Image (cartoon, rainbow, N blue to C red; front, side, top):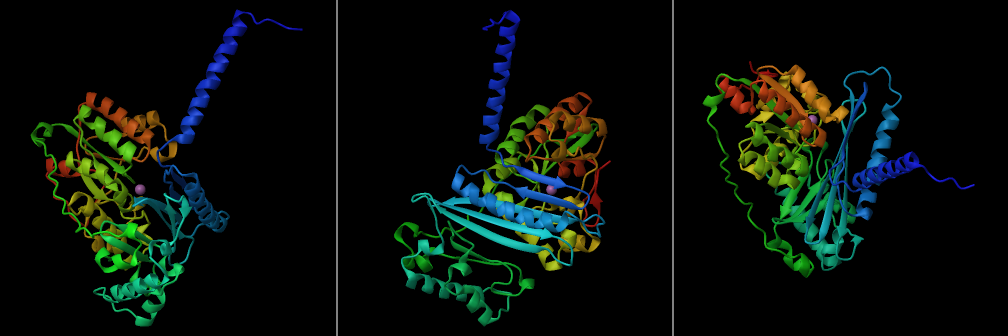
Length: 451
Ligand code: NI
């Protein structure tokens, strides 16, 4: 028997289909979202952090996900049953960086995991994709022939041995640079030439760390296929003069320093920058060196507009677990990447998880900035909650920790600024706050706030 819908029924059907329509829009949006998915899982026994890239290529994404799943599963298998944790906490850190050059997509994935013992383990993986043939390739793809690969490998051999301040074992270098695909798993062509990375232990001892070299095109053009030849450009010297502002207007104001960690993120950091003027706000970014190279324009803009740029290290590792040389490498690589982007070496350092021993501080020789307001934005990913937490704990001299890789965090911080501005607060960078408070930052103190 057919039953006709009455008015109420029709309205119900209509609103139901509207709900379905709207939710399907959200689902589609969710699937095509461009923002990187930055997973941070934190339990009592471990921290897990993965930088997902966003690449519009299913074949590449499948390979990346395969790698991530494999690494993650290995780590969780080891740590999941641990109940009584002996310090320190276990740690998993996976970053993926993407570069495009000359129709080739370069993916480099680096995993650091700590599952007890004295050291981290490290795993390097790379993927190369030719966007013309739509195929995965390896280093041999770029050379004229097999003979060329051999010639290049002997050039590489001498470049490695020539590295200053190193005293390498020739045989070790010879084996590690021989013309095999396995020896050349991590490379990329750049404006400067062919850049090759050797993970620790490939051409030298673990203690020597990773070794990287750049061979200018002039040395190898004859050996490359025509379309990959180039002219090596000198690294450009960046000279950015950032905006400064008159601080006297803040003299008698309550001050808050908002600090944004783990970025930059092209969409979220720029969204934040687009909105800071409304609140006459400047903020501080503690960026990851590994993310700087692909977000140079964003970090330049942030710096140019008068915000502080500090280091959050290169790969977000727990510095307390690193040897002196590995710790220095984490800091130096980040400082170099930042200098390369903005023309200035940072002086501010926020160690990941706030971890840095006194000995580490001595090695770092930077100004250590921690925080005293933490809305746990990465955990709840809820802009209203972020805003409320900040507003509730706000006080003069506070240093607020949020993460500009999450849209909800950026929106929450802006909402908090809106309210706190009404309450008479001004928003300044760490450098500005120190100046206004007459504090000369030293390298021994960890700054949680500046009253
Ligand atoms: Ni962080």
